[in-house]
Length: 215
Image (cartoon, rainbow, N blue to C red):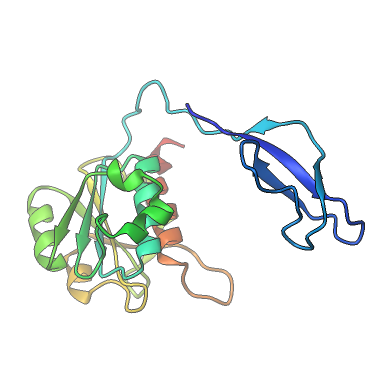
């Protein structure tokens, strides 16, 4: 797997001492990006480390995801990268959710948008109904009276493929999709905020659905 070689540089200004990594091949970094003083290499070169793919894929649940009216290209790009890492089978992009032909998605997807199969749908409810008729189990990621902790569902993961339904950053999951869903699952929140950023919540849920039944 391709890796890059980095150096750690540190500012010579004793009142600054800004410490930062920079790729060895880069011509930048000789001046401190904070105060402008000279910098020097202060540690041995090192490689960034990537996680190697397993030799074989365990029999975890198959998962697809439906992203309905997710407006941020950066969120969608991050979700493509998560889908690639977790091994999701396909993403369904519904409503205003931008597709990979939007160049801004690549800023956070970093190439994953080219690797993950996807389909685009104008109407999320129509798409979800069709996928349900194909045998997928719809699990909506949302709060509300039907919601149960995602982490209490490990015993129910084995079985037919799961369609993880994620809604808008602002309005959440479409009520029609909630009515169609077999389960509504939520991520426990202990702070002052009642929800996570949609891309982060998607990442937690996607990895749990793929691997939660194996631990």
